Image (cartoon, rainbow, N blue to C red; front, side, top):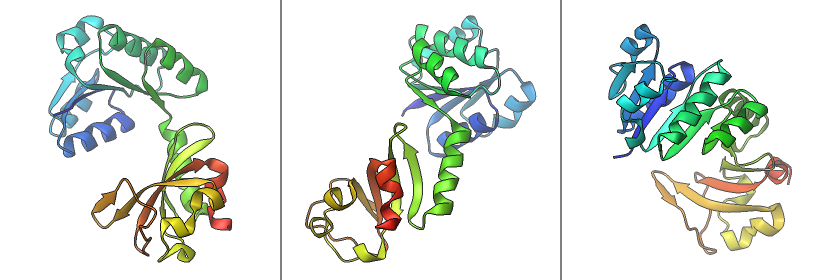
Length: 215
């Protein structure tokens, strides 16, 4: 079973910790606020009061034994950078860090974060896409220019095979997977037909994805 440690329990950290725990994973939550930790104790495997910027505290908790560390510290950029650096030096396998802005993200990456996310910005982008697109259900930004999205099947695609649609040539995108009810086909073939209730996992440039509704 994969194990996760969440450092800093604000709204983002709490949401991540609870979701991972409810998904069946081992989760350690750490925060300096005793009241927060008491409230989290029933929602994670272990909840500990501690200063996440203290190397001795991190060592005593066996941080290096966790598969993933999530640095979810809120408004204190200096603390999040220090914690990320400490985690890297202590040998944590994978570090995901929350960032406030691009400069913060660059520093986090340089001191050891394997992935940097912008929760508020990313949620704003998802909401915007859902508001302006009739097809896009979810959205993951891979870079400033490329994304992965989940879309419902456009009416004009229904009943056609991937070969007939030829989406790479016509739309500049690639269909990575097809979700059918509770099943997912991660290697769709050219002869696979698209049905009305399918969900498509698509990758492409943001420009091409934005133009899907217009073609």
